[in-house]
Image 1: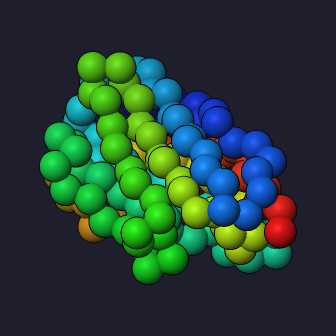
Image 2 (image 1 turned 90 degrees about the vertical axis):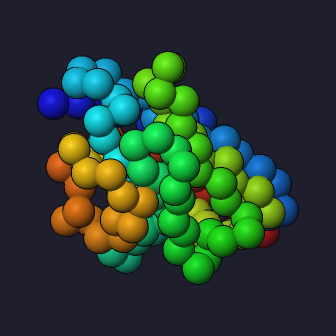
Image 3 (image 1 turned 60 degrees about the horizontal axis):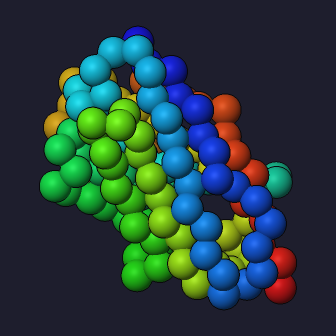
Length: 126
């Protein structure tokens, strides 16, 4: 089992940047493929990005390509999401998620993951 805690959210103006972190504890972090999702009020949770065990493979939603970068530091048990050129439509609660013992970056569905954090709020003002 793994516990996930997100941080780094906040209020930022359009065009700004934020870096989200997800600290993992419990079972060996490098055994998990990881992902970021977000959920806006009244909308379903949607895929943002994912990364495989080693960090060598990544995948992004079209809305994130070219603006967001997912990365991980297995020595620090931490997942990151660097978000640049933020837009008001990026507003939402951002969640990190973990899939145990699965070496892939193509994990775009909520049901692909075993564990979830509680989320961190990101608000982008226009």
